[in-house]
Image (cartoon, rainbow, N blue to C red; front, side):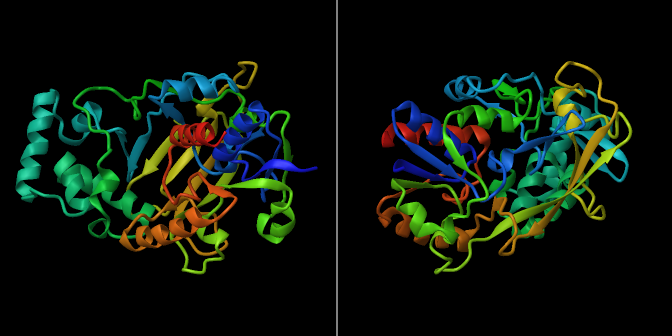
Length: 371
């Protein structure tokens, strides 16, 4: 069998392109080295609970086209992301809002909260933030930075906040209201039945080969199709000949617990430096603690997340977009652009931190141009 396209990777970018190509009358083969589809949005059912195997994924977008597209393949619930921060047993609202400011300072009105932030900003003497620490203090003041940002961020990135660029935290939600909706997007939710079910809908009727390592069978696989759509790490494609691009990785400790409720919320961030994990996810609350039939679930599944420096062989999660890595990526991009018969797309191939809606928008845009 000869195909028009070989799609390397059954994550969101690959699945969306494969769907669009097949609907345009093309023959497509999708391969993935994992035993599952969905890439990092893969979910698996445990005791009726959809467990986010590679970390929490909450779909949110202001892009109506993308929202309508994903709703072709899944029905979404009304889940709203409202995480909680735990600092040595003190609980605070995330995003930073009037609940946070009241707990931290005892202020009651938005005017009082704004005045306290301004007082702390002036005391710190920051005019042009040069790093993440200064950016955070200029946004929310010293108290919130010290308790709710500093420890968590340094665990997440493995570097002092003074060594991290300010842009990382510029989109931090800070509100002088009681709004607990972290993303505040027009469309938000979790696909009922899990992300794997949604991606399976995208790949319905398309040939998929799992446990298939592209690099171990590259010549044979390339010969099966007219063109390759590659969604893996761009440096791996070129055998790391210019060096490795750096990532942050994440390790998960997942437990099934014989209790109905561990922490009462889908996500709790541990913001002190001493707690080794960054957050605990309780997966059942993404679907309100109910199974597919609407029954209360008697057990729960939690995952502790540990951020770590990536090394070859680890799962790459967050690109470290500093000067060194961005410069190296541009060199790989030049090579990718010159590669005949291959197109590169998605988070790893573009060395870019993508939210799910942005990956899908990118894949749809690419599909329009390609097809």
